[in-house]
View (tube, rainbow, N blue to C red):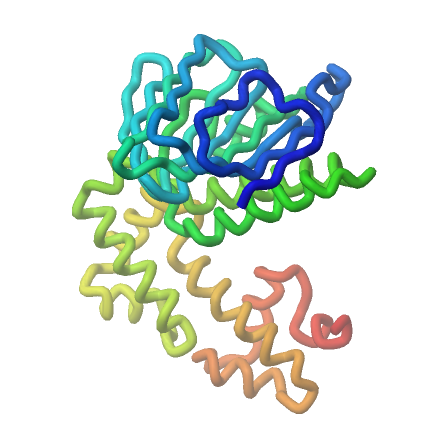
Length: 290
């Protein structure tokens, strides 16, 4: 696993790691840069790993892939385990320690720029935030891509990393859930309903049918999504249907009305309007573009 940029590592990198893949780009970028990644990587912590800082010169997002540990951000204490995500930055004190019996494996990205703070705040990751993510494998894959591009050291590395950082933050926001919220029966019901819609969207003709199969009423299903999601259950259902419709429409031998019927639309015109509301163009225009 060991791989690292050939330049001298920054002093804030911990030496208490058993393995690491870390890169660092321009540590003193121009102050008017909108968004720039300065360093990042993955660390397999040694049993004595410990970080204690009163502040930090950059904004940082860290993601725990495996292991256990503890975290103090400001005056709040959290337990670390797989799926934990936290952020910090200038003015935020941090203390990170690993469980010696089950050392942490964690990813991090440090960045700065005039847009950095607004970007974090917009997507629920303002410095001193702590949450957990659902799609751990997907998030880990994005961090791995970031590290690969950072280690290449090409002329485009800075732009590639900044673009990946934005995508990573938006992706994290899409699967973030405050830890406290995950401990409620309502959240368990939301997860069950969302999973049911994702598994059976192709045959579900309506939101009422989805709610009935999940043994909740439509109004309560909508309230769950308002509380725990960034879209309505109807929007989720339609987007999943339209994604499948787009795949089917790439086959030139399939008629639009056939796809509509397969996905539970009795009226092809309703199907076309829904398709356009999701993708911004009609099924016919989509097919011509493809």
